[in-house]
Length: 414
Image (cartoon, rainbow, N blue to C red):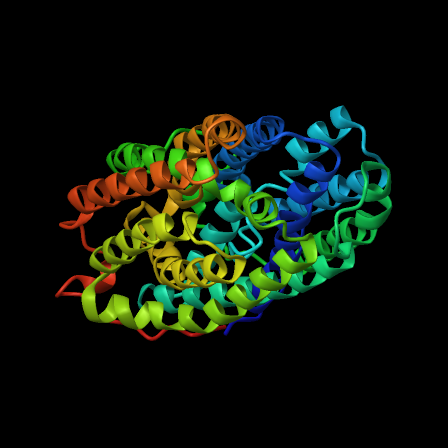
């Protein structure tokens, strides 16, 4: 593996740890401060909107000015947000810090997904590897992310157990937020050593012009449709997973963190099977199958009678999800124009991010006024719809390595 790729992997390890830790502790912390599910939904809306805007800017600008600046700056912004969370419980400051640093939104069992950081990172990784290695590299990156999230989940034990009063919550959760800040800052500092591949003269000449992807426009339109449907589903359940375990089973941040650590450790190894599934069945067929299964598993999980049963079903769902996650990412980057990869990665998720920003308020209302299971059931239906659309749009579009005429070329790793 190239030295630059190793640096990207190490940075992702630290960033995923920070994101997983924040994903477990922040919803529980805010609930302890007295946030209702609806108010927590408003918090997630603000973070999602901030993430959407920043992610779009990162995608467009990193295709022009390079990936490295964003792999440095975004972790530092997340670190700043975590420091502010450790210092105050003022609602306005928390909303602003979380929006700017895209901090605290997402499940700690989500393998430490890194938000707006990802368009620049994905484009850089694609440039650093050969097409026939791309699925494998993205799979290994997902494994590294899962291992980072294992650490983040275990670090949630720093927040302790039980249910402290609002006055005690800040003191109890401060160590966890400071550790999240340190992990994020380390990720940004590590990225200083990344050296990007040289660009062709034409690319250099275009670097300063930010433009909408033209050659990947048809791909982008299809992704907007599928991702919008999926975004509504993810926004309804993803940010609330830790909160749901807290409300449904009276679990503490430490207990939820340990559960998420077990999930991430288990899925770190099952993710390794992703590239072999893709080689055997094809990228689109594999992604479609695993997305169908993960949608169906939402309903029994929401209706589970105990914390252990729900946790086991969630583990099974995340095992399935981890197979599809790196493959879908790899597929989109494979069929996008090489000079528009970061833009496509960011803009393809823009409708999804806005959809994710809208749906948490609905979930909050349903949690407060109807039931704790209905949002999961609605999300399952939406994800099945997304899967059908994905298959319909893409099952005839092959990535380069699945083309019968493709011949792998050995490249000098240096």
